[in-house]
Image (cartoon, rainbow, N blue to C red; front, side, top):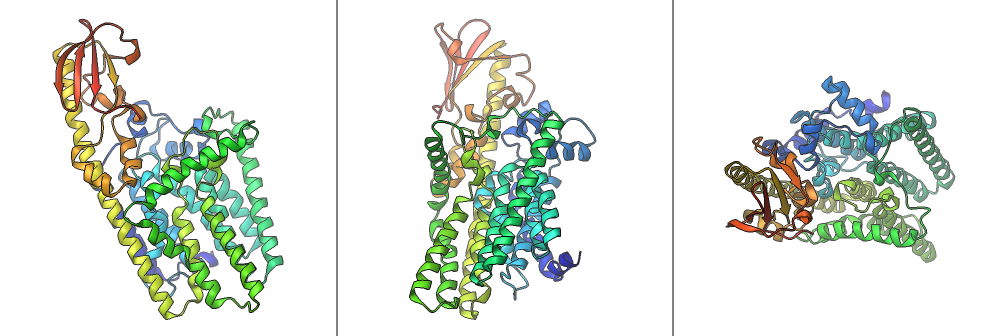
Length: 484
């Protein structure tokens, strides 16, 4: 407890972080949307066991006092913000980032990571995703106490695997930063021992996790949990997954010049190396420069982390929660900067915070426009189903972005990867669970579009859909946008 008290000794600075964290999630809090899986989860009440996320399932039962899963919104979102704010604050203290400032803007970086915009809208999942990150950071409060560190690491990794597996790369990112700083201080033996402790804790936790799944007979059926390591085309699959990550990465970097912001953070370790390294020999400088370059590139590779070797046929943005931690890792090298370099760092940090707050605001606007658009279309389709006494219906193509959102998508490309996956669409469950807002679709059978072989008679042709009659009971809805 002594270590924790030391981390949170400046209660005022911690309170500022929590207040700012709350303000960040306000657009989502006020919007109150149902995102992707949320629609089917409220109808079916299914848990996360099929994903191997049994801790999330158990916590949900414990909190909601029922076998079925129910969301805790708005409390889940507020607590998620506080949890991630706490995670970022701990890292700022451990790495002496903005150590002389009461308001530690960088403590928000884990929460306001642009990639994490794809996680926070989940009403059911967001609190468990966020908790998985904090549990991986807490052990490093005890980094210099071997036994405590290993014990807390095993517990944290085990629980995190049962909450949200993609977060686990954060454990290695934080650990490698500590180890690299030890290497720079010529403590290579200590660094090797610490690396051994990190790996030992991870493998023990992983074995315990796998054993728990076997003993409790939790059937992990999701292909996302299987690995490609022993596939004959392993290299091809690995590059395919990397390209999926690069698509998300490129979306972010092309959003309003974010690449320049990221490059600013990327240079911090090299500025430290240039001004504050004790090496005098040119050869040692070159060796250290190359080592630092490998180190920062390794951190970037760890953003997708274990996702690269999983069988999943896609790599969504929500599986990349480590970006904010990587940027903080770069800033960990600023602890020896003079006041002028610290001012530059502080300016970069504040610009990043403004950028991310603006991005959250525009996400809120885009979600609102899309929600409004969906509700209008769903109301119209429900009226048609009622008017024509529809018994069977096929749906072709999917609903595109709301007209009001087009300029937002153009200026903020990253929003396409977040909001467009939340559309009423084929790639986000255009099923009765989404359509049945008013109960009109309850007794309507949803049939495959490919099963329609008879000639269709058009009854309605208005943007954004066409409505066809096949026979007295069967109808077709053709939406305005082609499937991806």
